[in-house]
Length: 288
Length: 74
Image (spheres, each protein chain N blue to C red):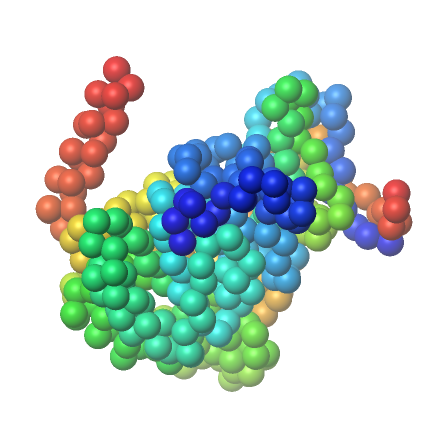
């Protein structure tokens, strides 16, 4: 998109919707915000139709606040809950067919590299467990095998939430759902290990209990994807409807799952680690 | 009638913590007032999930946010 497309032409300010004017005046474009400042600036994502207390919506809110360069980012999503909020943000959003998000992202990233050779354009895929590991499994894997330079984020709600509660490959073993009354027979797929084996250079797994850490992980995944290769984040974003979690207990549930099987985990290749150490050294020098 | 979060400003101003703002799933809804140092709710956007009440009362034991019923136009 670029910054010049965001700004309002002189004389047109009073004809633009208030939310858009606020976005340009008090938004994230052209400046770096800290996730701790949430609630003190106009956020990129607008009102969306996701359920009350949805932690996927929360993750997406933090995701947009954490983008290192929102004016030069393109988000790709697919059918599923996440797209309801992703499409309400002031960042270009491409709707891939169910399952082909990573194939679309591969083509888009290559095209952007040719079209804007002197600029960095970030491509980020955010899709659910169904879009990436069930139905989109082949395309996700092959984009990693080809070492395409973009970030893949899986918002894992462990169920097909939109269509009435069918089990997905990421549902935990034994869990009873509306459309899986006998309980799931198989184990949860280990997506993090698959990503490592398939050639991702940065892999992380988290539960959204600490906004600062989510933001840091997302920034790292995007920066590593710019220079080295595919990156992957596996985020636990509970479905409070299908798993019958009272809305006020959603954060409690995330904290509980963090202690069980969603402890924060980060893995990166040596060259990526060196790159981050160099960046951190530079920022400390600037601070000092 | 809507079920929304309501911040007690006198109690909230004592702390300067912003934690509820950081955990609200809705964008531009639970905001932080920089000069008054309090959180405030945009009632027309609040969906009433009460995660902020969990953060304020259960985690931090500060009890500054309550859920209230509100009629349109209030």
